[in-house]
Image (tube, rainbow, N blue to C red; front, side, top):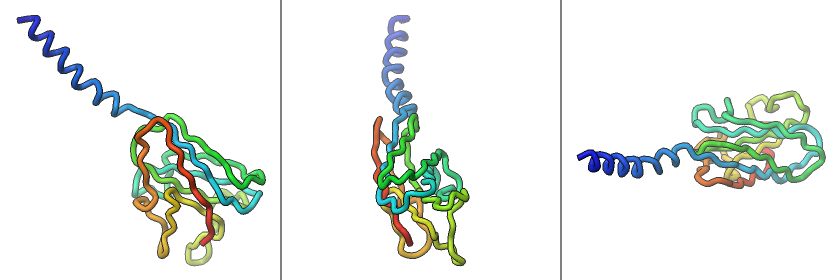
Length: 146
């Protein structure tokens, strides 16, 4: 009888263990930023996990000086598998915020994952989202001006 309980317990563990390990997987997202038009300022990269916080509160962020480069690589390591969206703006005057005109259209270059460029209104999480479901993922973002 004890042997049967032990076999059942081992079988249950074997069934559950892959589910537990999949839920805790992490990966690395490498962002390649292209079409950087100005050598001055800082590229502010935000990695977002939630629709309602998109463009407001990044879950992960990095600031990278432009340093005259036309292409820059930024990596986010140890990121849990899930759905993300990337937003980047080129802070040309290094004032720490995205400069906009009187109706809210950015004056500084921006870029989004999936090269999402909405025609009307601000970009949306759903247009920029992608899945991190592997150990390494490379996302290319082309900067543009509205």
